[in-house]
Image 1 (cartoon, protein in one colour):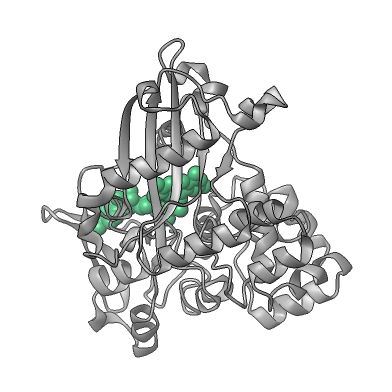
Image 2 (cartoon, rainbow, N blue to C red; image 1 turned 60 degrees about the vertical axis):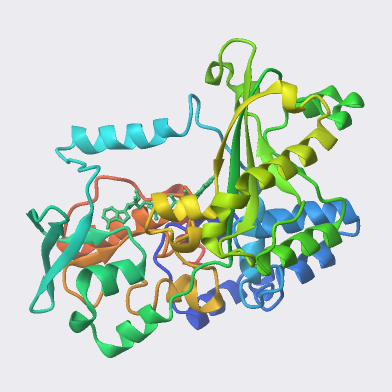
Length: 404
Ligand SMILES: Cc1cc2nc3c(=O)[nH]c(=O)nc-3n(C[C@H](O)[C@H](O)[C@H](O)COP(=O)(O)OP(=O)(O)OC[C@H]3O[C@@H](n4cnc5c(N)ncnc54)[C@H](O)[C@@H]3O)c2cc1C
């Protein structure tokens, strides 16, 4: 993690063979490179014997969308486990993070136009000239346009296929979204959960994240196989109770919780729209699983809930098609040098002055700031802008070790 995986999130990717050669030259990173050809399940089974421990680590490795039977991305398993291990809460709620960042934009003379959509990226003579909004307003690109949307939106919907070279159009048409997304339930509760397991160790009532519902690896695999078939069954999930750690999140003495469960977008019985019919029934399944582990979380103790399905994610964020919160699946041909494709992996694109910075670019999804940081570096280099930010220490160390 320290030597390569973490710093690599903040540097544009190099071609796989070149990267492999560097990793092979170092005793520690060689071990990570050797994982590449293994599936997450093979890796976890090779490391752990206990069924519950296997279920825990396989969940951490796959919860953000790495398929446990997928070959070719095994080097990411330690990264995924590490992220699950280092969960953080934003004090006061995660909206503070977005507000703080928008403050920085305004303080530096920028502006955010909300409640409006970009209809078109205007391209003329192979160069991005600006964007046209849905209300017809044209905003001229000062020096560049940078899209944080997925490649199909950016190139097929906004730029238009007539401006694309055939190879880029083909790769963009081939882009794939994840098979599974997230079903989340926010809870308002009269009491904090009291977990059965905490009877032997009260400190366990203060954990940040709980992974419940899988007593062994087989339970997890059976659940995920049902998800892949588009079926909703009783299954495990992770959950967090922020007010236990940050009491101001709820009125005095009361609590909030969040259940996050991997779930299909396309339901076998009725497609995505069927979510509107079955979501209430599915919440009840999740609550019943929670109460098996925390018996005081029963209906009388739950004041309110708010449900979000994979379809709701897509409706809210058009870039997260099929509810894919990484804007595109993690597949060998969609990661590293191939994310979102070999023509745009350095965050620039074959269209002059058009850049990309969303989760569909390196280093992928989640609130890591990796794609935005790498895109900013690239734009600054191309435009000859003097960087006023320092290189992260971990990147410097990895460069000095010859790994990046
Ligand atoms: C339910 C859920 C829970 C998650 N939990 C976590 C978590 O706990 N930890 C974590 O690290 N990550 C989490 N993620 C993942 C994380 O939120 C995403 O990976 C991340 O937001 C991707 O950032 P982005 O900037 O690429 O895309 P986005 O955050 O989706 O930003 C793109 C923006 O563009 C807007 N947009 C789309 N189309 C247009 C258009 N035509 N014109 C103008 N604007 C447009 C969208 O509305 C959106 O606001 C979660 C995601 C979801 C959905």
